[in-house]
Each structure stands twice: as structure tokens, then as C-alpha cells.
Length: 259
Length: 113
View (tube, rainbow over the protein chains, first blue to last red):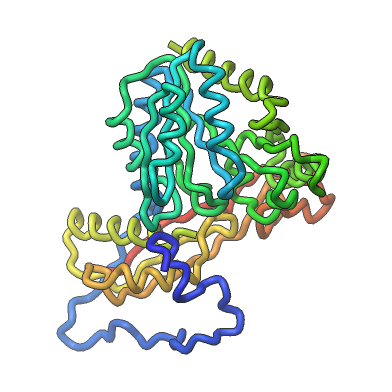
């Protein structure tokens, strides 16, 4: 069973036919027996994501103080996030400060791939967890050298569901969708495509061999997130990367000019 | 998604409230959950029961107050109901919608002693 989602042993998503046998009609949980203290109502009005949000707000203030443009990369596993990052940090490291936080359930393989380019990287292993949270990202910053006036990439755990709900303090979520996946993913995972401000369609070099329609993927993304920006590129061949670099340069320019 | 993590946050908030407002037991919790929030109410109820064990909220009843989704349709210049993300305007079919309500996951009130 997933420690975060609680999915697995009891599949909460398949409740329609109620095959499992625990009763859903509950007995009254507090009988007002004589001598029991009277209960009272307390108004709370608090978001249940408040704790993560407090950490995310603190991260955002810290990033602003360092003039860091922070991008939270999200996708399903295997979309090519790390390959795209390796290519990107190679291209940009001579013109701006770059650092990377990697999130995976296990291994330090991705951080090692980034470190091989000479750019500082820190790996967060979530264990059984399915997403990064703002608290873990705050602590990861303690392990990175101080960097200013540049870009911090946070590569989230490969998962199109849970990371959508967790603000890490980033400027933007960027969702990566590859041409070897279904073009209908924006409709199947609308929360993520709604949360992201930029969609990258990766592996464009394979378009000739797969039945992926860029036009349809873009139309579906517009349906769940009107106005979302989209770039089609190939981290492998390098096609289309300039538009992505331009978007990053503009973001870094914005945060450094605000000072 | 991640309802267990959300329930852990929820129960921690309840424990904090118990500490600051000085009550010993929570009998019921009312949660407002929007139709467009990234949370499954059934999974919240299931996980809440587990996470609340051994806390001030043990055996508390979780009441979910559903909030309907509502969006502003740029085309019709009016607010329209939506049931999920990716739905078009029920009147004109346009996807140029700005969500107005239905994204919340809030603790509204609790019954305590």
C-alpha cells in the first residue's frame, strides 16, 4: 500500500459496486449519556493544505531573496525529464547559475547524471512517497551551495496525479508529455495540466514512428487549461530546444530585474 | 490522490486546535470539498479513520460538505456550473472558463468537548 495515497490494499477508486465488506452505515459515534460534557461547535475555516502551503510560501520568499527562477518539472515516468534537464543545464550553465533538485522514490541516479555536467544537484528519495512536498524541498536547499541570479530546477517524482496538488514554492510547474504516450493525457489527468503553465511535448524526433498528434495534444491541453503555452521539442536531437531556453532566460531575467 | 498525506495534515491541524483552544475530544469534523479539488471524498473518509486513531479526533465523524464547481464563461459573460476540469460551458460549449468556486479543501467547523 502506498504510504501517501493509501492506494493498493483497498482500492478507493473502485467503490461503485462495493465488493469489499466493511459497513458504510456508521453507528452513532458519541452517545450523549447523562453526565457527559456538552459538546460545542468551533469554527475553523482552515485549508487542509495549510501546512504544505506555509512551507511553500517560505520557500518562495527564500527563492525571491536569491533571485532564483524556480521550475517544478512534472510528468509520468519515462517522459524524458532528466534527459531534457541534462541537455538544458549543459546549454545554460555558462550563462547563468543553475542547480537541480531531483525527486525519485529510490536511487541517486538522476542527481549523478546532473552532477556529471558540473552543476550542483541534490537527490531527494521519497521512499514510498509519490510526490515532493514543500518541506522536503526546503531541506534540500540546505544541501545545495548558495546560488543567486539563476535557475533552480526541481524534477518531481514521475507521477501525473499527486504532484499537481503540492505547491513547492516554484514560479511555474512545467509538464512534460512525450510522443510515445497518449495525446489524450491532458484529458485523463486534467488537474496536472491545469496546474502547469507550460507543456513540453518531448521526443518530437519519434513523431514519424508513432501515432501521436501534436495538434490534438495541444487542443486537449487548451481544453483543461485555456492559454497554456506549449513547446514541441526533442531533448535527444536538440530540435526545438531554443524556444524552451528562451522561456527560461525570460524567467530568469524577470526575477533578477525585480531587485 | 495522496489522501493519506492530506489526512495527516488535517489531523495535525485538529491536534493544534485542541492544544490552542483547550478541548480534549473531537466528535465531528466538517470538511468543505469542492468538486474541482484534487481529492476523493471517499478516500478521505477511509484514511481519516486510520490517521485519527490515538489522537483527539479518534472515532470522530467526518462530514463532507460538497461544493459545486462554478466557472465564468468568457464567451457567455456569465457564471456557469461545471462538474470537473475539462468540461466545456454547458450553454455554449466553450472551454474559455475561469474557475470561480469548487477548488476548496477546508476545515469548516468541529464539534468538541
